[in-house]
Length: 205
Image 1 (cartoon, rainbow, N blue to C red):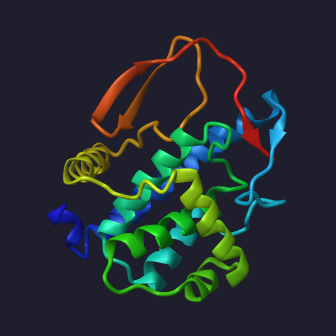
Image 2 (image 1 turned 180 degrees about the vertical axis):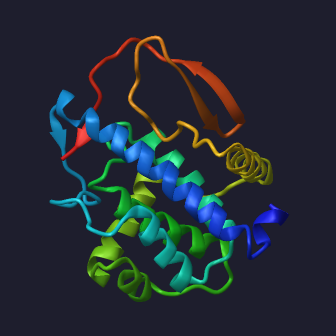
C-alpha cells in the first residue's frame, strides 16, 4: 500500500474506483427490469446529476481521510453486496453507498475524522439521512468492519494490478451471464468463478 500513500497515486485510485463502481452500476441497471423491484434507504428516486467520478473526487477533496480508507471502503462495499444480494449496486444507490462506506471506513481506520454532519454536507444529504445510512450500512455488513492485513494487502495489490492494466475488473455482484467467466475478489484473494446461466437477479427500485 506504500504506493497509495504517494500523493500522485491517490487520484489514480480515485479514478479507478469510480470507473469500477460506474461500470458495475450501469451493468446492474440493465438487469433491473428482470425482477420485482426492491427499495432500500440507499435508493434515490432519480439518478444523481453529479457523475460518480466527480462525487468521489469531492469526497477525496473534502473528507481528508487517509488513503487506506478508500481501499477499506472498497472492501466494505464488496462485503455489503455479498451479504445483501437483494441490494446490488446500481445508479440509484451507488452514491449513497459510496459516501457511507467512506464514512464508516474513516471512523474505523483513522484516529481523526470528520463527524456525520460534515460528511452529510460533503455528500449532499441531510445529517439525519447520513445517520440512517450509516446504521443501515453497519447492519448490512453485520458489523464486520475488521480488515486483516492479509485481506487489505490482497485488495491493494489487486487494485494496483488493475490500474496498471487499465482494465476495470468485474466484482461487486455483477449480474450472472451465460458462458461467461467473471473475476471476483474475496477475503482470501482473487478467484476465477464460472457463472450459472442467466437467471433472475434482485434489484432495488
